[in-house]
Structure formats: structure tokens, C-alpha cells
Length: 363
Figure 1: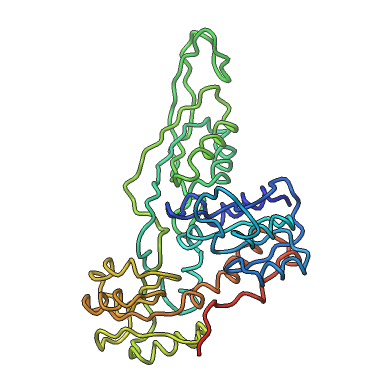
Figure 2 (figure 1 turned 90 degrees about the vertical axis):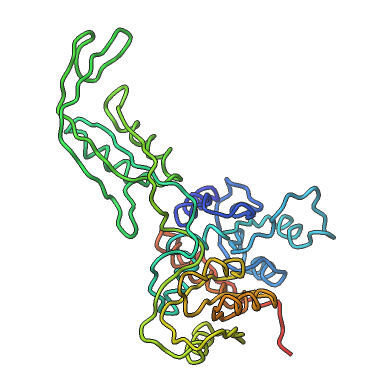
């Protein structure tokens, strides 16, 4: 497998189009035509992780956090030692950051499942558009076209795939001079028994679906419709859900600490509500506090809560469990590893980093 094929696979797991505007998910440094030897999965690129990759003969490091967030005018050994060293050893660098945070079955869903949170919706939905796609096909070619557009990404609704609605009807057309009709004669109106295939398509897949339809449709000029839908995206930042039972706040907070194997947690307690409705945002989720004030959340689990954000949480009457950034996102490795295996990456070329660790020490 080449790097460019890996990128196509990663785009299916968590489309890069989902990433936030400030982010730089995707290629950091790569030769797209290089064959993959081994892939090292890590939360961050650190000196210890880079040395681990070199020692293990790895030529791809796949991290959650990008090493490049903004454009560079120069790379020197002095100002970018890690990047310089990676380039010098021809190690390809790829990041799956906010696209994997927002994607269905991504990092937030993985950690949510680990904590027993039954997802109801994302905390903040992705702005990605959805479309209704309809195409008119001769009956005998309907199966071929349908299979092609499903393979290209059409028909996904939640955990269901290959969804469509099909209606039989009669299509008419008159081929004019200069055409090469598949059915009918030039200058004569033709009537054909056709099937109208209706399905849904995410914005990221629309061009691929249209091209797949054209490549498999028998007509020279296929008739098709595309309508923007005013539906809410099922992907987005964080998750909002419920847990079984109604444990006490302190009891549940301690359980979360244990389940995440966190070295410490900090509780911002604003009330004594028992816990049922829970919000989660792995990494740094302080910017979402204002959106939670009207969602009747019993506890918000996130990281990197500043002093003033903690005061804001108390002002809003929110209970917040502040878990270190590292301890909510270290599960990136396992979450992405599972997805890569499902997509057919051989286990023997995947390495889970044993050298990644929090940059903080507790004294």
C-alpha cells in the first residue's frame, strides 16, 4: 500500500473535509508514491516517539495532533528539530485531528462508549451539507447504477447504509442530430420503462457519487436531480448522551477517573444533581460551555478548563469534570487502530506507540 492509498482510506474513516478551519489534519510531510513499511500510531510527535519510529523501521507516523498548524517560511534543525529529523529519516507524517474528533465512530464516540454514554447527538453539529440525489435509469441497469453510487458513498443514514427509494415510471426523450442514443432513433420520441432511484448523499461524497453514476449509466446524457436538504448532520464535536442509573456526582466522577486511567481529575461542582445526562468533548472543550447551559446536562466531561472558564461554569450552574487533555485523547491510538483493521490494514504493520506520555509531571 502506498501513502496516497492510506490517505484515501483515512478520508473514508474520518473525512478531512470535516476538520475545523484552524486545523491542519492530513499530510504534514509525505512522498505519496512511497510504499508503506510500518505505521506508528501516536497522540503526538515527540522526540521519544520519533526515536521509537526510527528504531522500529517505521516510515509513517500517524498522529492525532498535527506538528504543523500554520505555514512555515523555513525549516531548520534549530527551529523545528523534530520535523527536521523526521524529514532527514524520510518518515512520512500524517495527522488525524479534528476530523477524527468530529467523525462518527471517531475519538469522542470511542471514549463515550468506554464511559457507557449512550449517544443522543453531537454537542455541536458539523456544518456539512446533505443532499437528496435522484437518477432515472432503465430498469435492466438499475442494479448496476445503484451498486455504483452506494460504493461511492450514497445512501448513508446514521448506522444504515445503501438506503434508497425506488419508483417505476416511463421516461421520454427525442434524440437530436449529433447525439449517439443508447436507445431510440434520431428525430423520434422514445418511451422507456425506467426506475427513479432516490437516495441521500453527504456533501463530501457528492462529486464521487455523480461521477460513479455517469460511469455506470447507459445513457449518453443521464437525467438526475440534486437537492440540498435542511437536515442536521450526525457528525460533530463531542457527544451528548445518557448513562444507565443515576449515580452521585462524586461517585461517578471517581469512576470516570478510574475508567480513563487518569492520574488526576478536577471537579467544578455547581450543584448536587445525580448524573443521568452527560456531555463529553475529548481534549479541550472549554469553548463549548455556553452551548451547554440550555441542554440540561448533569455533567460535562472535558479537558483544559482554565480558571476563568471554571468560574463561568459555576455561573452557568454546570458541573464540569476537567480531565487532563492527554488522558481523554490517549485513546486515539486504540480508536484509530480498530478502524484501520476494519479497513483491511494488516496488523503486522501497525505499531501502537509505547513512548507517548503527558508532557506534565505531578510533583
